[in-house]
Image 1 (cartoon, rainbow, N blue to C red):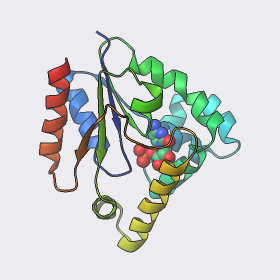
Image 2: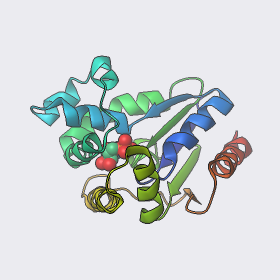
Image 3: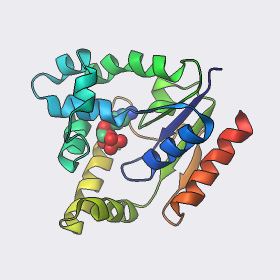
Length: 193
Ligand code: C5P
């Protein structure tokens, strides 16, 4: 069976948690596409060469989940040649046998417009910054500023900007507990299987 669940949205909206839960519930494979850009961002040197030569080791190195790696990812993610180098791998993953969940920024719009399910998971910048701050600590106002900076860069870039696909179902997790958000996502997938 070929079945793709595309989950897009801004940082710290709950995409990762929902994606992992949906993949586990339905036995699908999961790809966190942000890790691809994070690995390119922290590799250093020429980002286009890094994207073209990305290895499993690059994807497994520690430190990819930090705020700094997120900012580095968002900078290299605005380079069209970097995005182009990562398309094929993501498409193959999305359409591989057995079902796949991909989460990122452009899965439903660019990588897999034919996805059987498209979700756009979002929440207010304040709520997302607060969640990130609970994980990383430090100055909450600074975390909010970084969230806003990354949103602006991801939504404002010319190539594959972050936006909901026209046919995406929007899940706003600002006032929704994680269990309720996961249940909502799973109900949508189950209805289309
Ligand atoms: O989702 P995550 O926070 O790990 O993504 C890090 C950065 O990678 C995002 O801010 C975005 O700039 C970029 N990204 C992207 N397209 C994707 C996934 C991530 O541009 N599909």
